[in-house]
Length: 331
Ligand code: PBG
Image 1 (cartoon, rainbow, N blue to C red):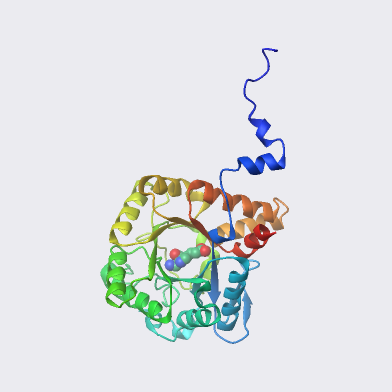
Image 2: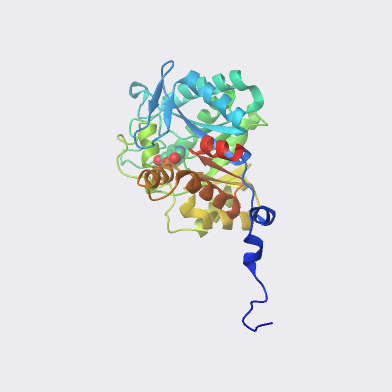
């Protein structure tokens, strides 16, 4: 034996497809995906979102059709975000509490079309309903006030639960909201309505296309740095997660996704709870831009990023590429 032969050849197990399949450490299936959907007014309406090529806002009937598509593809859950008409936005975001708002109508339409074949995750925060685009109530200095906002978020969550939401997902980053919402859900007999907390949500530049999609981008003055997290912080993310679990969250989310995989991994290692990541609108747009520029191949980029979330420890991923990924996985 020549001394130059390596004693171990890790390439041996990579030499053929069957062997790579046998040695694969991480699995990705359509059941790992949550599909975010944008709801708009009207009937038979599909409005493409310019900054999210391939993503549209759908009227309530179209949302029910997308939910059926999710079921057919094996995607277990959809997430809803409303594009509230401008005349229904106000300083206090009161439309969030309207039992007939877009969100509630979409929830009911999905439940009518799909029953319990698909989970409906609903976003709790006021930004799609406020005239200033902030996630909460603002005082005269423009500061987003915490406790008064939480009181409204509780009513918003109850409104969604009454309409049939399965998972309440507070994305607002107010302190103490998980406990307040959990208590209200229990007192309202919604014992099995889950809470997926946007626990570690960063003040990110990757949310731009989403704000176009829900129509809050043009309205937003300033930023969200007084409530969303500083991208420099990781220790603080663990404290956020710790509090939200203690307050009654069933699962936690890290957002954005790919730039924050270290947070996913640390949360998983420290708490061993179900962790989800949101591959946000700007991440989707980056992949689409790379594909359009010929800088990468869309399907491969999508699958590689989704696998990375699973490898990092995610139970699942919210991604606008969910239908594409499910189709690829279903062959
Ligand atoms: C609003 C909310 C945002 C997203 C989900 N819920 C935007 C924000 O906080 O400004 C972003 C999702 C995405 O970019 O895809 N509370």
